[in-house]
Length: 90
Image (tube, rainbow, N blue to C red; front, side):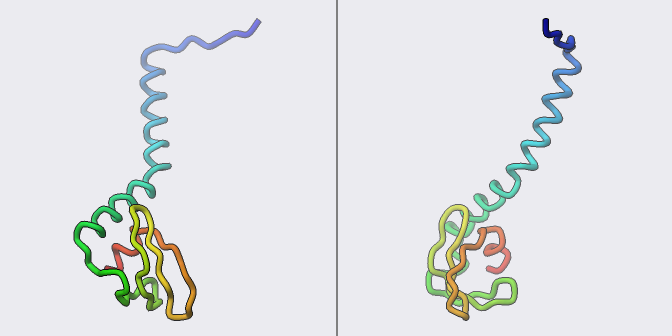
């Protein structure tokens, strides 16, 4: 026979609170990149083909999507960068 502990309303509410905090930390970067992508597409601080400086590198913007942007560095490397980082550079 398996015994389950009795859960009261206070325990359930506490469990929901702790789990919602854990979920919000897990999705924080996803929401941040998604929001930055929307702002980049709406405000257009730079267009495709623009030269930008990101994290000490000069790069050319090749593609902007909702969560990430594709850039071509001055070394010829194609890199996918989260939009939160691109938004700070713009």
